[in-house]
Length: 119
Length: 111
Image 1 (cartoon, helix red, strand yellow):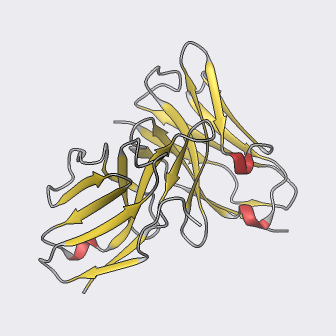
Image 2 (image 1 turned 90 degrees about the vertical axis):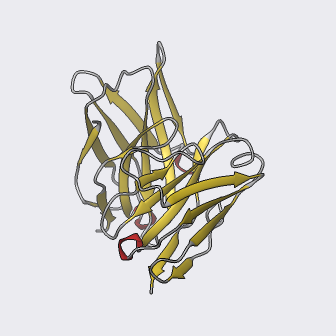
Image 3 (image 1 turned 180 degrees about the horizontal axis):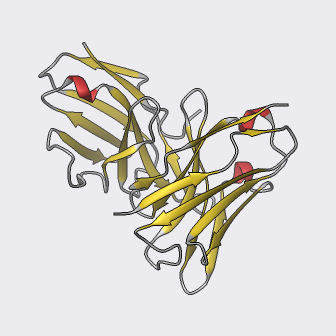
């Protein structure tokens, strides 16, 4: 059974960097069959896919156009986890952030982390 | 503004059958399968239907999914009080190098 455990701060100041980590159990971040995604949910409830990383003989990273200039998703094979960094945050980045496993169904989700951007 | 369009709310009485629609386009639902997620307050979305009409183990057969063209539907038969939740559709979007798109969510109330 795949389990995803998120960690990271719940409060970030404007213009700073949001950093979250998703630890994987029951699967490998290097698995050839999986993709590792970050998704956020705004206070109004809408879901937005932010990006993903996956391994297919080499590492790939794909990002949503809306955050492409500010986002980095990295795998950490030594700890079997992956991370999200979102730079230059504003209050509009306030949301619940989720990690999730793909590719076909986003069948496994982390517990979610409420990140508030405020001074 | 979500890429996939869902009604914001739906309701039914216990035992009734309720359907929730999800409208997309040729570059998402029209080409790819649809997933449905159920979200209870304060929890992460949980997969309910994948590959348009497949149920993960543990999901009752009261839940079913279908697709026609660029629209999909989730049907819940024999409605129960514990079905009260938010429901989201999701599909892979082929444009812009590919990405997941979601519906805005439908809040189901069991009267």
